[in-house]
Image 1 (cartoon, rainbow, N blue to C red):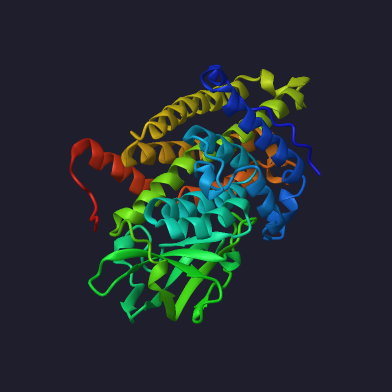
Image 2 (image 1 turned 45 degrees about the horizontal axis):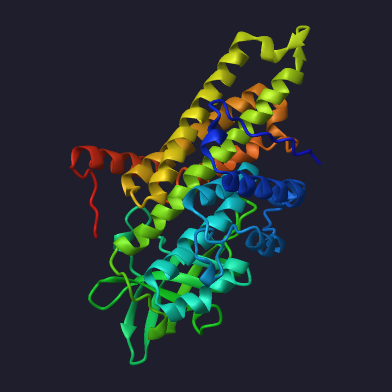
Length: 395
């Protein structure tokens, strides 16, 4: 079992820009991860098993809905705190962060933002504590980057609606107690519905065969004439802009999380390069190794500045969807590059489970695709700066 010796890189003294509360939150999450997750994560990853016993612990450290107000069971933290928590979780494993960010940004966020008071009080405290696990149903077998083309639909049936359709690639689905599902009404307008485990006609089979995010559980959502009470429809926002608002929150967390994976890969590569002796000296003494390490820390530092500024804007309510897209795309891209370079510095050891680099590399291949692919985020930036859409958006 590999020891977790992680020390976060801070080349530009970024900690000076954080509050004492920010640093305390980060250190407490890091300590929890090192004690409870690092010793077991490789085993769960290799077995493609989800460590569901960690769910309650994630609730206890405030990883579920960190920005949800205390009156609804959340810790009431700011968005930089949320980002730091995601960074520490993904520093260990992207699947762990996925579980948390889905619960936070894709389940709790829409219930808090788009739900009514009754829905908030019913679901949010149980989601915040980890008593309930939730999932988010948007992606369909034939509609990923174009969610507006969804086929899942519901029809009015008096005091309830009848929901039919299917969702795919849904994190947390097989274990979820509630699912926030996006479907079209009879006029074609998109609405969010809270679907509960046990509703007749609702099933969530697990998907197998993943070579990435193996310690995260993924499934489908199948709806066969499911009766959903009208009281479970989110009343305060409809249209495609509603789920896209949730994705903004999720992508923001991913920007921080992917940076955590990059920092972990760099930290391991730097430490190994000082210890690995070849030709009578540590490989850190060679120019090409120093080039790799210098480029890694440069990209990490740039991403840290980008992400912290985004957090400040998010706290002020000024962060735009396009700014969030830029950070998500950039940070996942640099994390993938750093993971690959770190693997080369580690040599053959880089493909073993004694180090987390290869696991990060495989996980990031999913992260670069979900919550908006790399190319889609480039087009979002392109549309924002030119005012011209290069792809069709149905709002």
